[in-house]
Image (cartoon, rainbow, N blue to C red; front, side, top):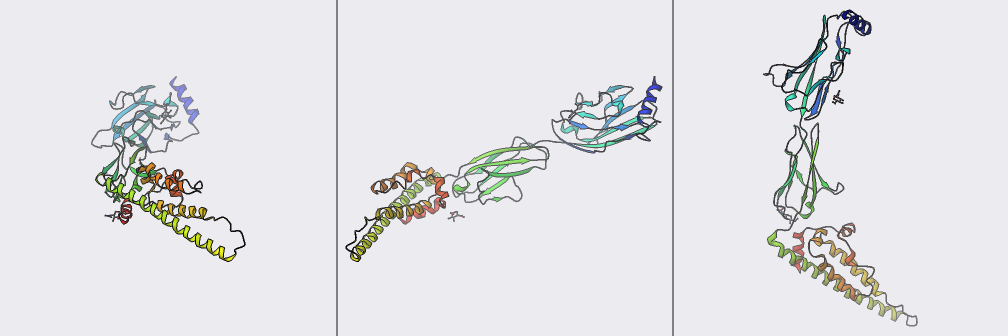
Length: 365
Ligand SMILES: *[C@@H]1O[C@H](CO)[C@@H](O)[C@H](O)[C@H]1NC(C)=O
Ligand SMILES: *[C@@H]1O[C@H](CO)[C@@H](O)[C@H](O)[C@H]1NC(C)=O
């Protein structure tokens, strides 16, 4: 029987190799904790290898103080996997019949303790061959936390931090302000620690949603953080005053321009009358142009307000003032201040200015 098997193997492998060889070449494996690794070990037998086949997998732990350990064995047609307490139930031959040339194994539910050098040894005397391979088990980043360190008030300094709960080094951090199209404010990324954004003299521009992505070689994790840069609570009254001041200035400016234009048109009208008395004088278009110039000034005045402030301070109150004024102007449908959204303002080219600048405006009035 043995002879028959030997002859069969001899015929099958005669032209494949002169001596026993392990044909697998890969030597490095990297997996995440909990995953399954496939450690390949394919071999060919030489005609002169007549003795029974013996396959052995040995692990040399990363800690070289620890002894090598038998992890799985194939001998006399039987499989023995009782040697390692650590790997019990997690290691098996992937081939249903390893003697056909495949001594590969799988290790499931990988643990950090599985890190080490694995050696596949195949013996069919006089043939012997062995192959070493390296297994590293990495932990995916997880439990990542985003938080603000400090007070996120206007004018204050604070840090936005990202911390990975666990994950094998090296970890790579990346911050982004959402949505992706939004321009990141000029912040200083700490050179030493890319997981921290340092904000100095905060403005409302820093408000928004930030995402931190943590990566290592085996996985990715992410956390989101909503940052609201708010006015310092004790100066809220001052800022409210500044807003009202700005609105008053706006109203005054509007009135001033209204009057100027009216006067200008009246002068023009008089000139035209002098120039050609017989010709019918067209109805004064002054209303239209007055309304337009008013709009122009209104826009530029609005520009001094940052959109977020308009949202922050009673929108209704703000909108009331110009619309009241427009109710008196006949040609108002072309401009409806209540319908100018904050976002439109910035699209129109309004430059958001921070609140401290406004309080200066306010103090002028
Ligand atoms: C061995 O593990 C690999 C993943 O590394 C898997 O694709 C393969 O199906 C597994 N083989 C067996 C026999 O379980
Ligand atoms: C903070 O920003 C405001 C507005 O831009 C500026 O007036 C002020 O000087 C800044 N303060 C510091 C300490 O940089």
